[in-house]
Length: 450
Image (cartoon, rainbow, N blue to C red; front, top):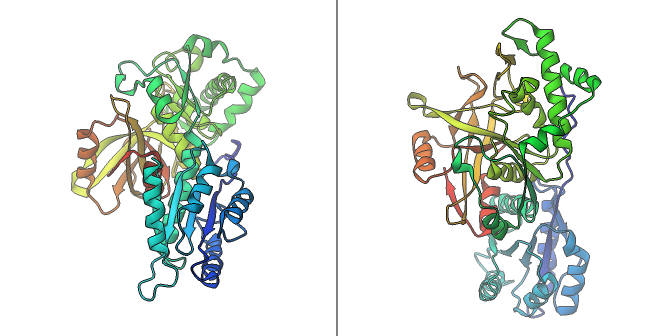
């Protein structure tokens, strides 16, 4: 399969881990915990994502020094381990250092089921109550460094914090508007800005298309992207030439947009334009670009894709419909266009009109989610984990059977519909439900579990 598209960047982001303690409790016990904690850096989903303070904070001066080492301006989140009980004196030091930074905070308390050596859990209660009085959101992490579930929670918090940092203050380009009569995709730009600091930069389709000019050599060069695809009309050479031209022109237009994510009204205007035949197939190839792209003018779909890229920078998130329910086999059918062919597991084919490219989706673990905005401007998140099955769906476009973890396909789709979510979800390979739940806590929003 072709891999000519530039690879998505894989720069890893980090959360800081601050260790706090009191002179009333054993410094040796605290240092032993720190040594255990630092070994977590080798865990698969934590590797490269944690930055540890180099000292134990036991008074305001050492706390300020530890925070300076962590470099708060470069952190996506801050985990504070109560290595022993600690009064709120150091919390005030932390909050003063954070200032106006909207950095997600986690308080980490230890278990101590027998002898109480550190009294960490009581300290976390004191800090949590104080944070609540300050109106600061926080996440509670509970467990010892050798606990596997605790490691998963740390990874979830870190991934959620990466996503939080990615979407806060982002610029989302809206080219045109939502697709014809997809009024459920409309977003109040002021409400989105108040909720997440996101700016919607809107431009017209006319202006976008004026910038879709490509060099003929570039058009020919991109025809090779469909070298392995078959063409139902039989004229493969002409089909590849047409697709290469459309890809190059759309790429040129997208290159002119300065944004973190893009929502594009691709149909009906672009899809049926004579100079842009094969738009949907081209959009699939364009999903490999570092800036995520959501078709049909779906702004929150673009924001959700931005979240997915933060969870896994190398991922290829795609917007999809949940279009079929297979009651007999307790599964759903995912079906959409504009999906990267790098996610295919089987032949790619184009219909006679070059309107649709079809291929089966690759089998594997997958997460469906949507960051959604209610009519009153409040945010919420839907998330469901499961797998794409090996058995291929008979649907055209990019399609696959999705089986939710633990079953319950009918309950999932009923919940999604009855709760009024828009008719799109973002799909990303891997199980990221825990990270999405942590993002919900960090944003202070409701999370619906499918």
